[in-house]
Structure formats: structure tokens, C-alpha cells
Image 1 (cartoon, helix red, strand yellow):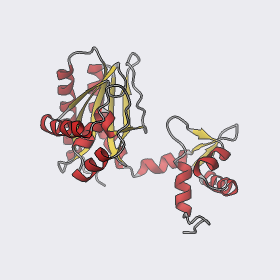
Image 2 (cartoon, helix red, strand yellow):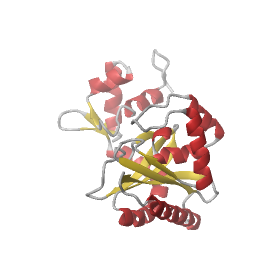
Image 3 (tube, helix red, strand yellow):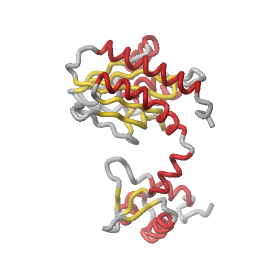
Amino acid sequence: MANSPSGDSLISRVVRILETFDTDRTSRSVSDIARRTGIPSSTTHRLVAELSEHGLLERDERGNVHVGMHLWELAMRGSQALRLRQIAIPFMESVQAKVRQHTQLAVLEDDEALFIERLSSRDSGANITRIAGRLPLHASSSGLVLLAYADAALQDRVLAGELQQRSGETVTDPARLRSMIGEIRRIGHVIAPGYIAPESVGVAVPVKGPGGGTIAALSVVLPRDHGDFGTVVMYLKSASTGITRAMRDSRNFFH
């Protein structure tokens, strides 16, 4: 694959261009993309034009660029996350019908919690997570569950890294976090009050794959004064068991 004068491969440059788009900024000008990636403007214009020709990027009426429908189509075809989401949604809907707040599904991706589905009601409380959005593992209920069931090397890496304070109640002490993830493994859930937003509580449980390993976290975000968190844990664990059973019964899940 042809390299640039800086030594970057073509694929590396394309990935850097695509990674400039996120849930907060879904469209950018070509000059903004060039500035953020550090790729020369002329090269950025050429790559954006080629990606647009293939439908991986698209331009709007103002000339700004956003992720193309064809890229979304390709991502959906072979995504195991999509198959997990399809199996999980009926069970998430069951939880959502009972709690009438936010019900979420997250997976571990690059040492972060990546949210692949979220169901909300009109009167749901505060929640900053979005589909395709990410949160640090230590600072959310879903992330803590994923961290607790991750391998020891990942846990050590996360706890030795920068533990950002997302709110006044976010736990950033490595020793306390290590104790917490041990407790999560023991009881099979976590209740995280105010870790992201002071007015909210995250409640999460692991979702096991057919082979027994944890492949996702199922969570709800509730108002601080909700009160009956034990019943919510029961709803989540029942849904998680249902998802695991449905995956086991789905011949196409791993194909």
C-alpha cells in the first residue's frame, strides 16, 4: 500500500479521515478534516473525492462532508455487533417497558464502552450516551461491568492509565476501582450513582455469550430518586439471561 512522504499508508490516512467524524460532529469541511488529520490539504481533497465516488463519504448542499450511506451499509453486513443488537432488542424492549427510562447495550472496544443500542422514553431523564458513542470504562455502569469481566491485562492497563473525573462522584482511585470490579464479579451487577451526571444512576449487568464469556453490558439509566434499584437489577439479569439463551439458539450468530 502506497505510503505518504511521512510514511503513513493509504489505509492509515483513510482511517484518520473517517475518525474525524463522531456523534457530536457528523459533518466537516474538507479543510477541517485536513487540519484535524494533519494530512496535506491537496491530499485530503483527493482522498475525500475518491471516498465520495465510492459512497463511503457524501457531501451536503453546503459542500461539507459526512459519512456515506454505503459505508453504513458495508458495516452492517458483517457486523457481529449488529447481530447481537438484533437478538438483544426484544429483551431490551421488555426492560424498557418496565423502567420507562434509558435501556442501553454496550460492548468493549479499544478500552472503552461503545454503545450499540439505546432505547428511551419521551420522559426519560438525563443521559449523555448515544448510539455509536463511547464512555470510559471506569466512569459508567456499563463500562465498569465490561472492565470487571475483562482480562487482567486490560484491567491493569486501564487502572494504570488516566482515570478522568466525569463528575464529582466518579471513582478515580485505582485501588478502590479494583475493589469495585471484584465486587461486581461477585454479585453480577453494579449500581453507579452520579458517576456521569449527578442526577442519574446507572445500573448494569453482564451479557454472556454462548461460550460463557462476557460480550456486552446491559444497563439502564435512572433518576437518582428512583429508589427500587433491586427490582431493576432483577429485570436486567432476566433480560441478560434471555439474550444469552437466544444467542445460543441462533445458528447464525457466529456466521
